[in-house]
Amino acid sequence: MSVFQKYWRIALGLVVIAALIIAPMSLNRYGLFILSQWAVMTIAAMGLNLTLGYAGQVSLAQGAFVGIGAYAAAIMTSHGMPLVAGLAVAILLCFAIGWILGYPALRVQHHYLAFVTLAFATLAYLIFRNEEWITGGIYGISNIPRPSLFGYALRTPRNFYYFCLANLALVSAAAWWLIRSPWGRAFVALRENPIRALSLGVDTRRYTLMAFAIGAGLGGMAGSLYAPLVQFVDPVPFALALSLNLLLVVVVGGSGYFFGPFLGAIVAFLLPDWMRFAEGYYLICYAVLVIVLMVFCPSGLLGSDPKTSAVDATAKVVQNSSGCFLFHEFLRILVTSVFTDDLKLAGQPLSVASMIGFITIRIGKLGSAATV
Image (tube, rainbow, N blue to C red; front, top):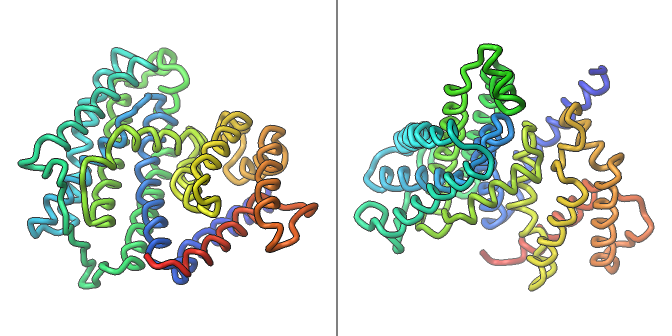
């Protein structure tokens, strides 16, 4: 790594951190909500990225673990217990269930394992919906209180956003350490060639179970933050669609890349709201955009070159990759066709960052005028 690349990474990281801290100060309640949701779902996607991207174990049950964590936190905080207790119970409960769910992964692989986790996700949803004595059934659990931290109330949307952001930072630091530890290298060895890893002394059985358990624990943690964020929990948000959306986050961002869930969560959870300028057609535009992205960047935004670092991969996605160059041109045409009346963009060389930034500013102006 050159000195320029090192300082470029540091500068880019500082800019992103500053944006996450400063930008919410000018957002309305809805803008703070979707940013908080991005932070929470990024935590859940980091767990799935560990299970799928690093350990190579297919899972369609991450949304179920988010639901388990949400219900655990909702039940405990509704009975007067602190969120910290609900957070601990959610993580431990999901860790234990994930460990048990990992046993089928010792016998089946690939799409067979996906069907096993799909069955578990369906079972969890049915329990959320039908066991009214504990989950409230279709009526859910309402009036979930937001916590206080060291006597500082987190009831306002902005304060709770910073609480979610702090949890994301802690999880990111822990995941960064885990990936670069011997455990992380064992997960990668398990993904690349389980037989060779076993021949080198890696306990593939234990690491398979650990991959499921840790990923599930992060899903439970995300759920325990989601419950006080929305302050109402019912079965609908934790159906199969959430698991598929989290899978989309990992795949679009780049499976097996540390920063993949961060970018993927932007595409899956923020981009649909950014595209509401298309009014009734925004979901169609979003679907087309994701399809085009996956056609020309099948390995995700950071997956163009497995030897490329996060920053270099991002630059390559934007500039050098022929497929993503077409995606860049598609986005440029979309922006110029929609916003030509506001700004003379046609014919100007625009980067993906500048185009997304312009869309964000425009949507922010629209959102600030709306009443949430």
